[in-house]
Image (cartoon, rainbow, N blue to C red; front, side, top):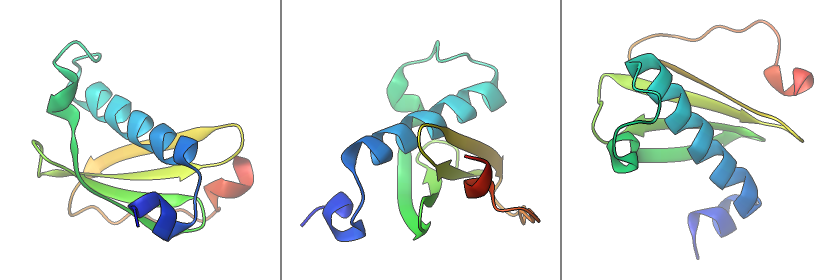
Length: 95
């Protein structure tokens, strides 16, 4: 059983989450996706609640990502790993 099957989510949501996380990291690094795409690989990506994923990067251990997936939008933010993200409003309501 795959991660997607165990989490009970759609493959397109996971693919969108991967893409937005990698794109957000590229923006933090100011590379604009011009480096080989494998540079932005995730080492870990897990579902934390309905539509919310968290991940760590393989080559940039100092950063973490949080991804919110809603229909038809996905939103990702990349932060220093030790940063606590405190959002008062649930972004899923916006998405």
